[in-house]
Amino acid sequence: MDRPTHTPEDLAAVRRLLGYIGEDPDREGLLETPARFLKAWEEYTRGYRMNPEDILKSFEDGAQSVDEMVIVRDIPVYSLCEHHLAPFFGKAHVGYVPDKRILGLSKISRLVEIFGRRLQVQERLTNQIADALDQNLKALGVAVVIECRHMCMESRGVRHTGTATVTSALRGSIKTNADTRREFLSLIGR
Image 1 (spheres, rainbow, N blue to C red):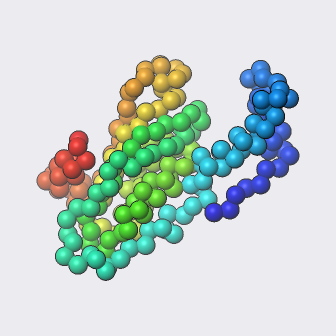
Image 2: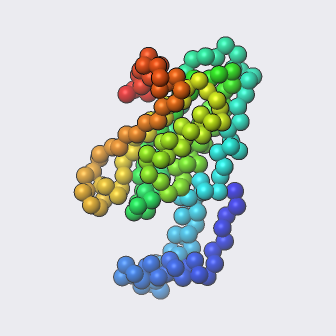
Image 3: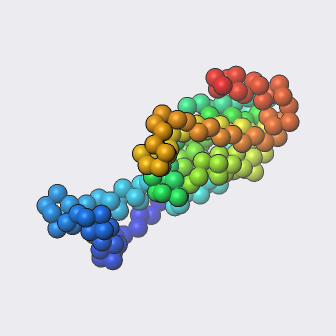
């Protein structure tokens, strides 16, 4: 993953932002802030420099007789609301029903990371994860449930703290079979 280099124009843009909010960008405590800010944003948005197909390698080895659901629960989600550039965070629960192929379990967490580390809305994030799994793994069924707190809602605007937004995306047998869907929801504690 290549890191962008900070140009003088990039640093000047952050200095202008500091001035815009009423700060003195030449104040001692803020002298290194433009570079720190850009480095942090490189990390917050590193998903743009990652390709889901690169990590979604599946295996037949180990998949013999595996026809039951595979779930990774409580995957940390950190993202930025594309409307306000404010953080939202929480957890994702991702499951699939294999069809002769399985993924390395860490690949599911990495997939959440790739799409989460982009400017997002939670609804799109949920569907991007489900679609990437569905298209690359060719599983019998895929399910993604994400529950997050949004700072754009908690720290500004309506200011309702502690509220959670829950989104889901279901594909294949988990969407069409009520028993399979109930099993997934039960296993993630919903």
